[in-house]
Image 1 (cartoon, helix red, strand yellow):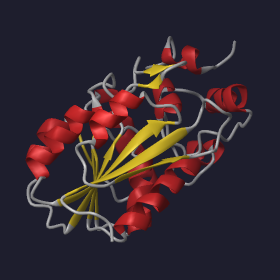
Image 2 (cartoon, one colour; image 1 turned 90 degrees about the horizontal axis):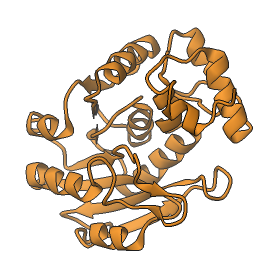
Image 3 (tube, rainbow, N blue to C red; image 1 turned 180 degrees about the vertical axis):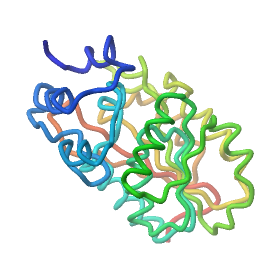
Image 4 (cartoon, rainbow, N blue to C red; image 1 turned 135 degrees about the vertical axis):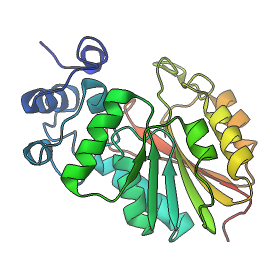
Amino acid sequence: MTYDRWYLLGEKRNELLALREVEQYGRDSFGDPDYVSIYGLAPREWYARGVRILGRTAVECTRDRLADRIGADVAAIAGSASSVVDLFAGSANTLHWVARHTDARRAIGFELDDAVFALTRANLSAMGLDVDLRHDSYEHGLTALGDTDADLLIVFVAPPWGRALDPESGLDLRRTQPPVADVVDTTTSVLGRHKLLFAVQIHETVDPASLAELTARFPWFATTIYDLNSPGQNAGLLLATHGWTPA
């Protein structure tokens, strides 16, 4: 049986994966058994530490090579930051790397899914990572966040893509769950008094109309595509500011 993307999104989506399954997924889909490296460790290393993931997390998580690049690019614009917030934390691996690169004093993540939250909380504890993971929706979580005491707040936005990624037209940011523009609007309505740096995970091919609708909200933005996988399989990053522009 091939542990490809569609298999893991199907019957194994909400099941714990054995180490051999994690490695087989990486080997079959990307030619690399260590593809799902998270928290700075290869699968055999994090598995030995007690970390466990679901099939959906193997597919959806931002692996180390990508999360490291994202963190470095965020830090290049933001410098240091007192707070980083991940609105759809999942494995919290991106949150970990962004906080590490920006030397953030607070790393806060919201995760609504019961199973993902429970596993990620246990994984963070097993790894000894200082991440404040909250079992909450991003809407309520932002409202309950309170005063962040941050000159600049970094907000990572990566809602589930679901059927938003079309093999021909690319990623439609209006069809993510929820739409990225709605997430941005909710965030600015709650935290608009702060200077914000949004970091939005995108795909190498993005529906241009959806991207234009989103970027019209910002005084400054830039996009980067990470050439880490085969053509057609690469993620990217949209960096965009609210309340300020980089010097």
